[in-house]
Image 1 (tube, rainbow, N blue to C red):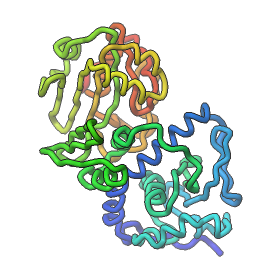
Image 2 (image 1 turned 90 degrees about the vertical axis):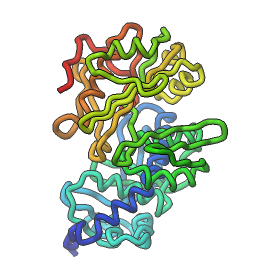
Image 3 (image 1 turned 90 degrees about the horizontal axis):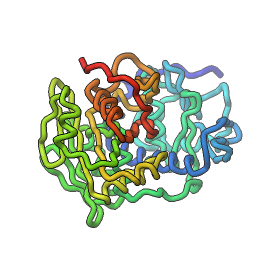
Image 4 (image 1 turned 30 degrees about the vertical axis):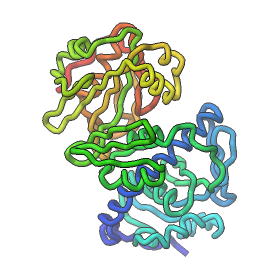
Length: 362
């Protein structure tokens, strides 16, 4: 039996699919953050192996029970239960089969015609929320494997920090995503003009929204040994003409570009940000102030990762800038500051020390 004929995503209700994903994206992102923390606790990355017939996934030397959800070849999505070439045993396609009852036409169509590289990630998100998967892993950017439940330890982060990490990992409309995520995490949600306030006891997270309803995403943390004043920060970044909009806040918003820098010298804030780092915690804890750099990011930036060449950050895939050049310039400029420690929040690694002043944003 050959592969079934593919059907267009448009004919399967892509708009309804996207709306449904917007509701669950933060919940799935929080689960993926928990998965990432568990893998980091196991050890450094190494050779990965997977076997859809046996239902196994080996990551960092540990074997997980996992099923193939489906596969993506750049032109179409094929569900595991419809893959006649692999002929995966039916019990090893249970997660994909459970999704067929989740109410979207795309979950029941064997092959979906699409070139959208976000689709494998979105399918993995749906499996977490609607099929009981604990997390998902993309093998060779082509095969989506989902972990059976009960294999990961609890998240080391508080519910509020889990939400903060999830927001940084998604670019969906948060007016739709936050209610579901806060309910599941047991947090209180309050709507403000162009913002949400999320509370957990005495701790509060304010999520500033863009005009499109997405959040400003963290792209860098800058720790200083000295307590730099906001005026000093503004002077150091004078080429960008940032404006002070509140105590300890500088912002730039023009031509669709939004960049925000928040300064704090409270020990509680500095320690919290340092503790959330995957690397360099001890160096950051010895600092006395922190600058948080945020920017607006288009949904198409989701999943893009960055590399460094001679201290200059660039997207690892795609063409052109994947975030405003002004935001990248802020990170580079702060990295040149004396006694600064800058951490990239996309890769979550220390920012490489630049040797030259970055070019002005255009």
